Image (cartoon, rainbow, N blue to C red; front, side, top):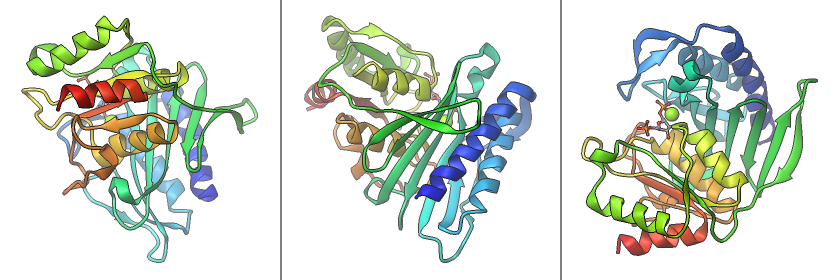
Length: 278
Ligand code: AHM
Ligand code: MG
């Protein structure tokens, strides 16, 4: 696992350089989910693939930007599902973006996830790893990621972050969000799941949701690259993650690019979501 985390650190340093120095415009390509790729989505994907190709414990990789799984080492133990540059459409407005990694053994589903990592490229670059516990690291000027602290969610928090177009929300979701606000929560939403979930984690708790909407009944966020890794991290930090009815890590995608409605948060907020959907 250490060598996988090291490959992620090396990729992060290279992606940070690309963000700061390369063209942040769109390419002519469309990815597997139908989004037009930015040139940086493609470059970041290649950087990560290159770094994982050096690691003999990696059996196979699949990313949000790739149509198909890519075999690496036949005798490798781990499968890695990743989103190389999540929130990349926010690059032009200079908001934080991130890379998300799920490390699996055997299958790409929650039950087979063994570790998860994300990197956030903000005013500073940080990395959060969840393996035995959840730890945060910061990239120093000498190129090393220094351990900062362990992260743990409180029983409840004060932040609410909800995605999707409001006019496409269900009545039920509107009512649930009203309940959250009536408890005193405040809106904090950048439109990048890495900074939005990082904020909730660092500020002790709250709720992030990307619900089912009339235009996207299965939500927008992809299980293998985005939702399972954060579900793993939130559970390890003492919170939870649900699709509204079921625990996220019990879901089984039938295709690596499958999406799901999702709610991540501290315990009280996740209980509220589950009760509301009973
Ligand atoms: P991307 O992988 O194409 O960048 O899309 C994922 C992003 C998430 O970071 C974020 O939570 C969501 O899209 C925001 O979507 P919306 O603008 O519909 O609220
Ligand atoms: Mg993404």
